[in-house]
Structures are given as structure tokens and as C-alpha cells.
Amino acid sequence: MNEMCSASSAPSSTYLGRLKRAASMLFIAAMPVLGLGAIAGCAWKPTILRADPALTSKDLVTGRITIMPVKFDTEKVGPRERSLMAAQFIRATRQNRQDIPIASNAEHDRALQGALAEEAKFLRVYEEGGTDPSRLAELKSALDARYFVLSRLHYEQAVHGAGSMGGNTVESTLSGKVSLVDTTTGAVVWEGEFSSTRSGVDTQVDPHPSAHALPFFSTFVRAWPAQP
Image 1 (cartoon, one colour):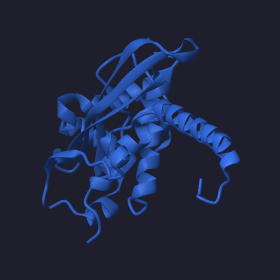
Image 2: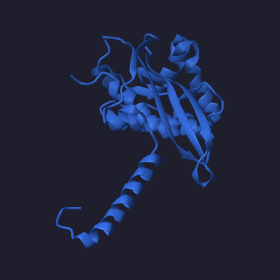
Image 3: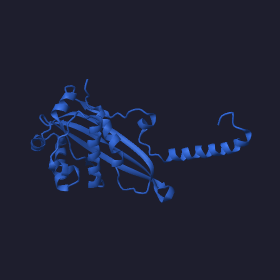
Image 4: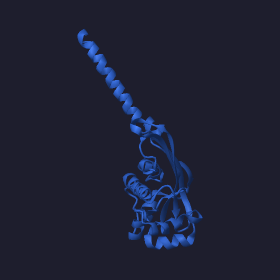
């Protein structure tokens, strides 16, 4: 309040100010924490484990990519969540790199949508580190993409006790690696890792890694070789 306010209005203004501050604090406390990068206002960046200096943005644009079904190291993450994760990876790619074509076919689409038989077929590409020539050749001929995008993920939750409205205070972490495999050579030409942690009141403690998915995958896509 400015100095032009009368003395008689000061108690009311002070009371309203306290209410506003309390409401703001409650709102901030209820917000999920997505990571230090989000709080600080800076862009998240993955740790780059491997980057072939010969890989260029033009290679990705002309060679095309295929996003494979995501692979979790636990069976607790069900088909619906896995399909949501894949959908968000595609969304992250289209939002951040509209220049990179994403190749697919009907069977691959069903795999990404959680159809178990098709998903199991495409998940086989993760065997042998995703670089087995016979598996790459089998899938490449149908998908017509030079690069396969593999995601090996870990998800965990920590429940810290009862929260408001009978819910639980849950801290969840999604971490993992994303790799670009060149199907013509079987080489991993780019690989990065990242971890996203968030917390808040949640009445469900079943795995929900898709809550992290869009910003999580966006960090990787933004780190791929860009146009000069």
C-alpha cells in the first residue's frame, strides 16, 4: 500500500496483505518441483556421454529418426504409462526440432500405443546395446530411418507420509539415457543422461513417470546437433 492511504484503512490493508502473502506461500508450497533448472529459470541440459563429431543436424534431417518404445528397468511401469512416455517424446521432438522427420509405420505406431505384441518386437532392438546388426536391419527395412532413438529409463518414488486431504507427499525421480543409434553401422553416435525430480501432494502412489516426460525428453532433443 502506498503512503496516500489513510490511517483508518491501514489495519484492513495490513490484514489483506497478510492473507495474500499466506495464499502465495501455500500456492508455492503446493507447486511440484521439477528441478533446479526450472527454479533458476535456466534450461536443463543432459550430461552428454557420447557425441560423434561427424554427426550433424543435416544427418538427422535427411536420415530421419524413429523413436523406439521406451524401456524401463522395472515392470511396475505399465503399458499405458509407457505409451504416454513415447507420445511425449514425439511431442518433445516436434516442438523442439520441427526440421527432423520422424519415421514410423502402422505396426510401430501400435507398439508406441502400448500394444504388447508389437511393443515386444520393437523392444528387442535394445538387446546387445541396441547395436546388433541383424535386429537393426530387420527394423530399418520397414521403418526407413537411419537413426533409432533408444530410451533406457529408471523411475522411483519415495512416499514421505500423509499430506493434506488424505494424500501422500511423494517425491518422484525419472532418470535415464537416450541414445541415437546409426542403423547403417550399429554405432551409438550420440548419448546423454539426465535426471528429473519433482515432489508434491499426490493421492496416487502408482508409477506416473509421464508427469516428467515432456520437459525430460526436451532436454535431450535440444542437445542434439543443431543447424549451424
